[in-house]
Amino acid sequence: MKYLCLNGPNLNRLGKREPGIYGSETLQDIDKALQKLAGEFGATIELKQSNHEGQLIDWIHDAEDNEIAGIVFNPGAYTHTSVAIRDAIASVNVPVIEVHISNIHKREEFRHHSYLAPECVGQISGLGTKGYQLALRMFLEK
Ligand code: CA2
Image (tube, rainbow, N blue to C red):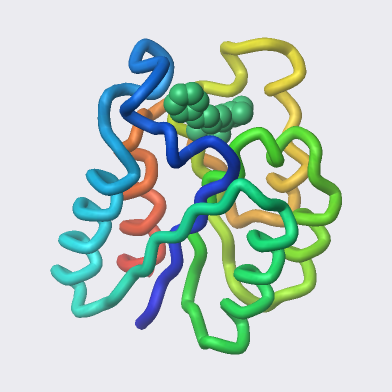
């Protein structure tokens, strides 16, 4: 089975700034842990990051054509703004788990609402970078 891990805007800065909120791990560290976990189940996962909404939408569409079995998705700030990404998730037959490193419900009011959550299988928030592995494990054990 093939899985995809998508990351939205500014997540390429992980580990470089704001370690108090997002920890000290980089996207590369997250990728490494996901590769190891997927490997244990004989699966593969590809991690991608983009700062551009349209690119993320194209990757979501491509996931269906590429027979991706599930997407672990940290949409970054697009979580709170993007009807277009919500529509993209709704337009494909690929399950998506929304992941946030920080607890968005403990932060500013504008982060409490997700446009995407109603189209996702579920949401993991506030469990640090471990949340990515938990989301992938959910797909792998299903
Ligand atoms: O907690 C999360 O994972 C978020 O998706 C991260 C987004 C934020 O807009 C969401 O509300 C919650 C921001 C990602 C920015 O990443 C940075 C990494 C290092 C330094 C500064 C920002």
